[in-house]
Each structure stands twice: as structure tokens, then as C-alpha cells.
Amino acid sequence: MKLKLKLKLLLSFFLFFFLACSKETPDRINDYDLQALASLDWGEETTFVIGHKNPDTDATCSAICYAYLMRQLGYNVEARVPGEVNNETAFVLDWFNTETPEIMNDASGKRIILTDHSEAVQAVNGIEEARILQIIDHHGLGSIVEANPLFIKTMPVGSTCTVIYYSFKDYQVELIPPYAGLLLSALISDTNNITSSTTTDLDRTAYQELLALSGISDIDLYYQNMQAAASSYFGMNDVEIFLSDYKDYSDISGYNIGVTCVNSRTDNHNDICTRMLAVMPQILTDNGRDMVFAIVINVQDEYTDILYYGEGAKAAAESAFGQSSNNRIRVQGMMSRKKDFIPKITEVFQQK
Image (cartoon, rainbow, N blue to C red; front, side):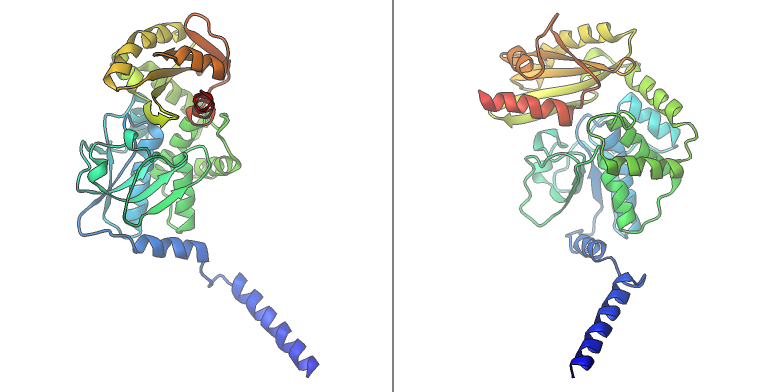
């Protein structure tokens, strides 16, 4: 009897091992994700994927690519942007012959998927009256509130497009070159070509795999062209430049702040700083902020100047990043708003 029992147990083990390793066995996690997506309240009308206000390359490309992914899964989904895209994003879309999504000014009454943010203050107008189905992001969870069930997928990686790339893999949807190129462009935009402090091993793997699919033959030259577009600000006035990669943050330990990231080159860095300082009072008033900050990144020499305006802004910035000179604080390296600036300034506010 003992021998028969041992044989049965051994047989059961090998059967379980065979089934677990079989290619016919579905991936349980992916299957659960797909079932969860299918259970959402999709309705009969179009669902829209949209990134944050002042859309950058990650917000725009994530909306485009995630809308495509959802369509491949059988859902009626289209991408939108909540405003004009910046010059870098326009360059990327033109390179991959992709149309800029239509602008959505009001999300009221619509079914919405949010990418690259979950802060209500950063979202398209009317988000409080929208039905949010999904949030796809790489930031910490923000203030968006949705009473109905929703699907949330966030990962601690360098870009939202990294999250979406792995979703393509998880759901076994083929990634064709234009979309691979958009995902790669957003990834290198948000991670300064895989050099920023936000870059993870998942980003590096995605970078290599997307590069092979994108059709880009010289990635360094392509990134230089992206940088040139990002720092040219051709046809934009100073307020538009400030707002091109600007985000509001509400109630950070009682403070409402605004933070922009502006790219510069060695030959125009000081001029850009002077111009951004000049418009900061208007930005503070127009956006109802207590303080505003500008992270001006020299993409050639790889240093960052932090500019500040508003009551208490200088003291907060100096407490977080060191002594200032000529209304700016210089930090070596290219600073990340998400990983470097916001956590440190939040810590200072919490100590007050």
C-alpha cells in the first residue's frame, strides 16, 4: 500500500509539473487581467485614453499606444490629448508618421482611461464628471476618486510607456514598429536616454527590446534630435515654454505648488533661466499656487538649475537642495521631477 501511495504521489507530481510547464496552460496572471478588463463598464460609446494637461511625450505616446492595445483586445477606444503637444512630442509623432490625437477640452459624461497621472489637478477638465475605467501610470497614486470599480496598473519604472510595453507582452498582442517607436521615444524622453535616476532594469530591458522593433538605426542620433526639438521651443512664447512640461500638485502638506521641467542647451541655458524667472509670478497667479518651481536641465552639460518663486519657496528649495545663488540652485546631473524633486520638497514641507 505504501508503495502504491508513493507511486500515486509521484505520478501526481509529474502530472502537475507537466501541466504547469505546458505551453497550452494559460498564464494565470495575464488571464486574470484580461478577465478584469472584460468586466469593466465599457458601455456602447467610445472610451477615450488621455494623459495629463500640458501633455509631454510619455503622456501622449502612452495614450496613443494604450488605445491601440485596447482596440486590439476588441474595445472601442481612441486617444485624446488635453492640450497642444510640445515640440519634442511633435517631432516624435512626425518621425513615426503618427497623427496627433484630437484635443479633448472636457471629459464630462465620458468614459475615460487615464495615463501618466492620477492627480485630479493635472487631469483634463471635467474629470470629476467622467466615468474613469482605468489608470495606467508610473507615479504614486494621486487624488483621483472613482466610486465605481476600475482597473489600475502602476509600476515603479521610468515611464508609463514601459508599463504599456509590458502590457503588450502580457496580453500577447503584437507590437508593430510605429507603436514600438512611440513607446521607445517616451521611455528615453522620461529617462534621459536611460541615464536618469528613475531608470530601472525593467526600463533597460524594454529599451533593448523596443529598439529592435522600432526601426531606429542610430538611437543616439535620434535622441539628440529629440533633445534639439525639446530645447528649441520654436514658435512658443515664454509662458508657453514654462507650461510645456508643467504640473500642478495640490495639498502637499498644506501647500499647492506648480513644477515645470524645461530643457536647455549650453548656449541658451542662462537666457532660458532668466526668461522662466520672469514669468513665474504670472504662473503662480494664473494657476492659484502658493509656490512655483522650474527645473531647468542643461541636456548637454548634464546639470540642473532649480528656480523658485512665491512666499517660502526659496527657504523650501534651499532646505531641500542647497544654497542658492542668483535666484537659482545648481545641482549636478539631470534632475527628475518625479524621483528627485517632489520627494525632497515634500519632505521639507512635512517638517514645517
